[in-house]
Image (cartoon, rainbow over the protein chains, first blue to last red):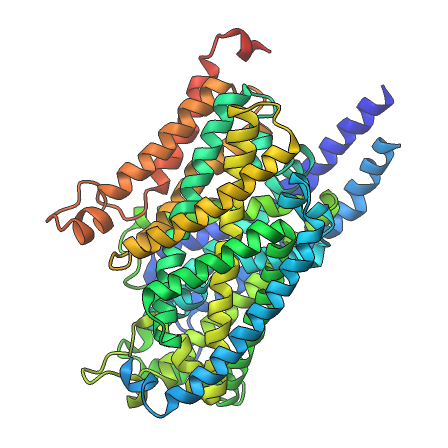
Length: 90
Length: 507
């Protein structure tokens, strides 16, 4: 019984960590593609007095978001998932 | 091309490039010799003994992903149309969190050598293995042809070698690495190449930005003022002309990455799920950094290459084609030495990527088809023999297909490989991990329908039907089939699973 409880806790913990991170990746990406698909002109607006467009800034931000998501997941998994796996193995 | 490489510069270029390349070959063959002693079992052959660390595997994964085609192709695309190159980079990169969050750990925990182990885990093994092997092999072979043709042309230009000689050199070195050194040698070849490529691209980017005092404002101003399209290069442009194509391409890029067999098999080279996670985090870091570099290189080439007569033909076009933008830029900012270094790195990159692909293909043949379908219960020794024969066979096939397709436009093959990975390999893997009610009938029907619809839609689409077969109008109007073929696969698997009343389904 104890093992089953632990296993359930593992699944729940994983879900709690993975779902928000998945949304944090997929929603901005789909939004990015959506703007390119339907409102490409929006991305051509330039930041004040420069030749740097909003599209390029958001593109780079998206790369940074992707980096943060992967690092955050590794951190959270080591902190919350690994201990449960360890308990399960004992 | 002639103007640049047969002038007085060519002697210098060839010496630097050829020496660099010979050193790379010597080092990698030595590694292969060392790895061969440790590669005595099938397990070692396909997983390098499971002793690769997270950082090493992260580098090797990013090496698999940073092919010469993506280095030269994406920087060439940025050079041609600016912002549009970023769409590809981000689409490729966003596949990585998907792999990390949804695939990497279950794959590492349930599988042995490849994703087919996981798909066939709860299902009827034989048909599922055959389908997975077809999915893997079609992805691998399409990708391999595209790499081989690109390799031959690039080496022809950079080293002045005849196309056929280039194909044979690449094919034979790849066969040596994989047959004797297995996954261990392939991984180290990939690691060395990843470090070389990241360093080379960093040097070019730093030398370019240095000319603008590292100010992105000045840098982008200069690009907008130089390019014929002016400020339009900072916004979405000609690459994607309609919403359906944008979404379809976006899906293929995101989910295709998560279905590439040569990438997925790398998760078995590390010791556990923890190291698998670390590998993806490192790989995402390196790949994202690499795409930022290719973006800077593409814009740098707009400024420094596009109106420098040394790199233009008499008609004003760039020598070679747009894919040569990064190579010309290396010469523009770093002279013949950097040009030679980048040429050698490009050659090394091709070798490393085709080795990884061949190993993934050999795994589908020997592990899925031979050891689990044709001769179930085959002993380790015979499986090892089949793996090596499969490697040699795939290598020879790559050389022959590379020569046959020399004059063909093969760019669509990478797109097709990604579409198949996104519409067959990814859905069957994803649903067999996360959907309890999936059945063998669902996976086989849906997966095959996705695979076949991909191929048909690409053949009837604009790239093959109009550009290659010279018909007036495409039967299927979109270049990228993933939106449709992925829908077919997911719907097929769902529908044929829930309507499956067989005894097996009830289990």
